[in-house]
Amino acid sequence: MTVYNKRGETREVTLRLARPEDVPDIITLIIKQHGNYYPYVDLYSMDFVRWVIEKEDMYIIVAELADGMLAGMTGANSKSQFAGTLEWIMLTIRPSCRGFSMGKLLISFLHQILPAERYAGIYGHCMSLDTASQGIVAGLGHRITGAFLNSYRVDTHAENFTGLDLPFKHNLIVTCLPGNKKDAGPVYAPPVHAGYIKGVYDSLGTGYTLREGEGVKPSRVSSNCTVIQKEEHRYCEFSAEEIGLDFEKTLDDTLEQYGVLEGQSFNALINLNDPAAPWAYGLLENRGFSFAGIHALSGLREYMIAHYSPTLPVPFDRIAVLPGFAGEFAYIRKRYEERKR
Image (cartoon, rainbow, N blue to C red; front, side):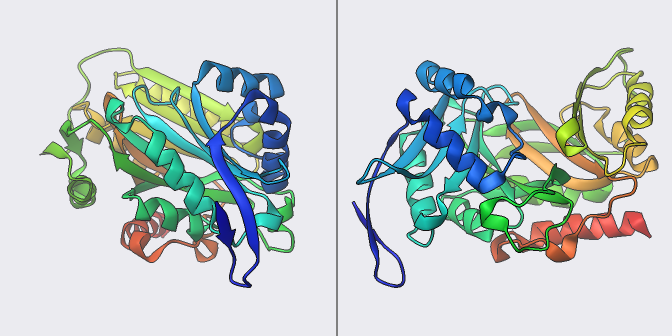
């Protein structure tokens, strides 16, 4: 197909699934866009990218120019963090090919070929500097549900960011497109945030049963918690699939181990289908965490997001958010600023 920019220049481009021989160009595109700080470090490995293409664990779409060079790419990961979901990843456009609506073409084509009906939902983590990608996914029906604040370290100059006064950390906006999960089940929401959570599910058109309350202490002794520290980003993700009485100790041990590091930030994911979720949120809030929305339609469970940066402020004034997402993000910002007073 022929694509045009505002100056009337043209490019001939073919959209197709990636092939193993595309791997060197795929990694080159990632480096041009993100330097050495792309959050998914496995995608810098030729062997890994070739392997996922051959196994079809990822749906990787490329835009190929007439001379065989790749103009851009995007993809979806079927082996995502949340079982039974698709994760939209990796919208990357070669600098010389920007302005030709390549991103919209790539993501639209990706959504056309995805078997979305087999998955609970499709989610994305959009970089908050880029309203273009937010606009594309919003046009395809995605809704903002939350944010991972201060999660992505960028203290290098990738080609497309040269000259910008970047914050130390990027913030990722969580978007969701419903799939085959029609009911989120019982959702145990802290009363103060029940209105926000209700609004998210209503906007997604998903059923739910809202159970407000201060929360009960868990009946189980042991939690099912996962702690992932990403050293290159000074970022820790603390997830609670099941909440037990040892949740508080696990949380405090995690904060003690990593909280002393310069530039360290934390985002917690708490299972909203667990009756002890409001109780766990109270513990997080007591330790300085603020509410950052939810990660909706995430496979078997629904999650609440909470954020904490001991010394690093969230650079809200540098965050660009699409107007259609502004209401949800304003709520998250307000909750953060209330906690900092």
